Image 1 (cartoon, rainbow, N blue to C red):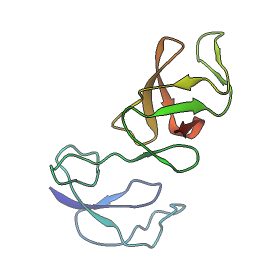
Image 2 (image 1 turned 90 degrees about the horizontal axis):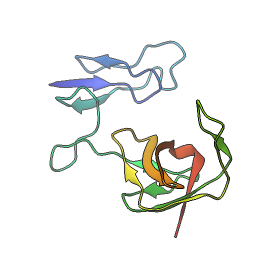
Image 3 (image 1 turned 135 degrees about the horizontal axis):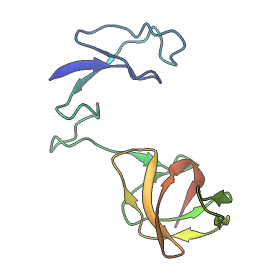
Length: 122
């Protein structure tokens, strides 16, 4: 199914080429981007036809499966009194379908972290 999606924050879609007219959208009045997707997630297709997920850390460095990252701030886990401390290392991360999140293990606990709270280390 070919359609067009907004490059901004509203996530708008159109069946025909056009511009985003959503008030308050970061890409208002810009041309929408062509999307060919069957799963409805509006990802750009790579060579194999699977959506390409590009996750970036807090500094904008591209993350890949197996990378090692560290926390850049203390994080309190919801529903518990546990606090993950700044500098805690997570090795062998895995990308999720969401470019803003990664799967990893911190102190033996499997957790999903937002990319904005981690920094890739060499």
